[in-house]
Length: 263
Image (cartoon, rainbow, N blue to C red; front, side, top):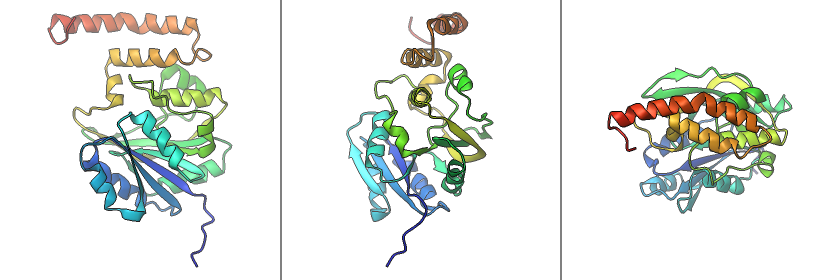
């Protein structure tokens, strides 16, 4: 008879849209975790590449689900619905978890009264560097924007209070999610090690790339702020617009003069 694990089950939800070329690395990084009591769920968000074929090679080592392309927010929400674990971790299909990610995060969340644990991030590929994010601070989260990675280890009960908003198409849906948790009194804790590996590609096309320009960041932040009037007063919104909009206009005007974008 198989001995039952005393460790809580951790569900890892890998969301994938046409990243079949990286999916094997992502799955393998989960299978090689030092923490053994895990389940791996792949949500295929309408991929037209070899995502399905790669997933099927793992047979009963993972659970694979296909959905019509509805975006990463719907894919994550769908993934949570499929989980059986006490804890949930999201992983984008082009990213990786270091071997002690789950073990170390579980140790922190079990010894602190928090709803989730996030780590520093090692960026690799086109650029290589480690982040130096501060510990959880609601003032930093509100005033500076998203700095908590989406791959934090969460208590599953968090998702009864907040979900990813599929209506956000301009980026920062992860920031919106963490702001929603804050409004419900859920706080996090930093594990100060770079245990998440984030792949940086040349010309990477995904939602986060929409926020990498000043205009993209401005639009995305404004759209999220409007969803949280309790956290962002009209006065705060006016200050934000006054700070960034003149700079956006100047940069956009210069691009128009260079003939790089349409008016």
